Length: 264
Image 1 (cartoon, rainbow, N blue to C red):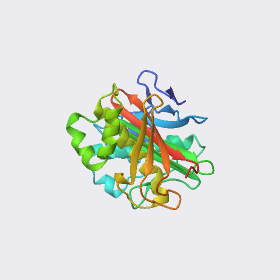
Image 2 (image 1 turned 120 degrees about the horizontal axis):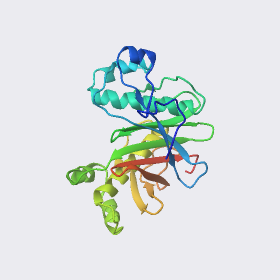
Image 3 (image 1 turned 90 degrees about the horizontal axis):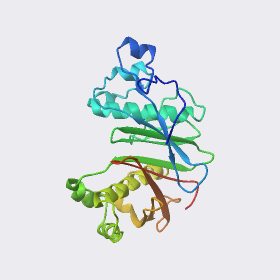
């Protein structure tokens, strides 16, 4: 990983607070860094990441940093407000890399981010991280990213009942991996989330995890391969295959990404 260029308080490792934030006594913002996501293509996908503390969080940060606060988020608990705020902050930084300054990323009817015209992007948060990626639509058809904290043993049954089928579980057992089964299951779950985020703008509706099936898990290359089981759209047809790449933000946090330029 390498850090993005920014004006930084070298003692705290944080971005300096805005004048409004300082007047309200709000803490400085965490410094974003760039996660270089390798997927076998050049250049590497550059994902903007923030490492933040969800507590304490003050909703006044939205106004102080000029980030729109939707009514549904205003009614939510501070942890959810922090996740939304830092996700939008990461998205703003990702857009700035495209030369789009101070853009507001709205929220659609299905809670999807609404990107400026000519941009495809994705936002995620988890494990104390928020991340975003924004790409020119003229070169990229779709992109999805997801962050997940590695689940514990107690979550195994929940994933099996919602996101991972028995054939997929059998494939994970066959890997004879040095990694814990819970780690592998987290990667598969996150990969499916990344695909959903990439596909949703084309599909336009929610679909189940059973819409795709894991067919290969390459730990050396950190790549998963899936088969689409049902036609989701004219572009995303049954039997098509796609790949998702994964990496680690730290020992307990997985990040995945999925995107295409017209592979189906």
